[in-house]
Length: 296
Image (tube, rainbow, N blue to C red; front, side, top):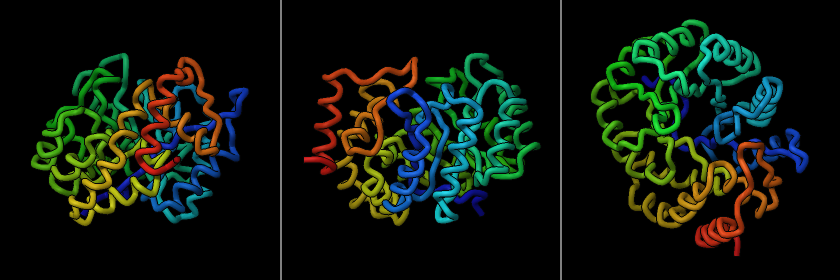
């Protein structure tokens, strides 16, 4: 039996800021409510799409509090608590658990390049300290290190290690992990543009950037995948494909924030070292939104 409720689409929530760069708590609340009303399956605040490295500890915890309040038990909350200092990750995860998080998304330690044994001991320490499900975030393109299948199998033997957000860009890994760890190991795509194939290989859903902008379409897409209706999923993929591409035309989450500003939901403000989109990129995002039927 799967150890986690995280299937379907989970929105990697952007963190809205006011035009002067402060946390916009009212907008956090509105975004959470909009996602739930549109039918997303879970919420993932304080990840890298949420500009986690630029947030203060107090801001991270306040965001989780607000998202948990807005979820009202309707959907689970997978809070981002990762980094290269294991002790600090454990502290942050514990505080988020006390604020009602249903589980944690924890990125592999970046920059310091731990060995496979280092990765095992890092996640084991979190497992031993935290009593709710942990989804490992494997993104070698950004963190340099890759949790290999053998290490992942060792980790899955631990009580609270429940699955992986896979952003390896290697579709074969889904099947490899399924063969080694079993079909109940919770595999979530970290890439909207290839989530269709990921699910067909045995994945259970996607932690999505695009669903910030098009939550209902992304929820319909993942629901179709979950019921095995890949013809319906393909039709939705065709509608969303330009948006999946455009939202990474410059560094995430600037394109998603711009798209949400077009919809009148938030300011497009990002914190350095992120910068707002160029005019050329804005035009591409708007064209993709038109294709998806989000604007005229």
